Amino acid sequence: MGSRLLRSIGRGYSHSQRRFLYPCSAATHYSLLKFALSSSSSPASWEPKPLFTSPANIRFFTASPGSSKIVVVNSDSEFSNLLSKAQEDKGLAVAYFTAVWCGPCRTIAPLVDNLSTSYPNVTFMKLDIDQENLSNTLRNSGVSSVPTFHFYKNGAKVADLIGADPGHLKEIIGNLSD
Image (cartoon, rainbow, N blue to C red; front, side, top):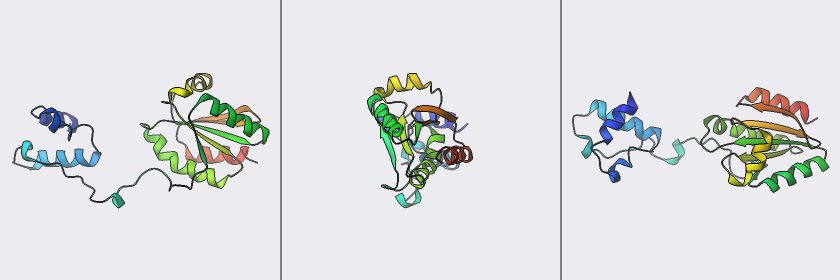
């Protein structure tokens, strides 16, 4: 219902005024919907007010800067090099396939950051599926949804996990990192 109401309110707006309606934060949508349902004044006179007054009130789904040991992979060659290095070190490598627009990816990101610092001998790689330079890696890995985790030991894939399952992720990393 809220979307239809917002679209009907936005129809009478010019393109420059409509930018306040699409795309914006959930807080602005909530404020606009609350205004439309409770106010007798016209929407054209209303200025959107964010629900959050300061950045301190907003919770972001990332760890603090500098605390993560995750390597962001930007190309197919980087991925191959990191996988080869992990194979030489005879260690575990975790490929974390994610996307900026993915809600479950943002939800599990703090846990992945924490695991990367808890297991310093494990190589954590973050691959954004929307990166054009990763097309060969994505095609070869067969990733069909995000978040997806691939676990490599001695250069070979030994396990995978599809979805944001914190308990299973901790269990797999704990078992394979020994």
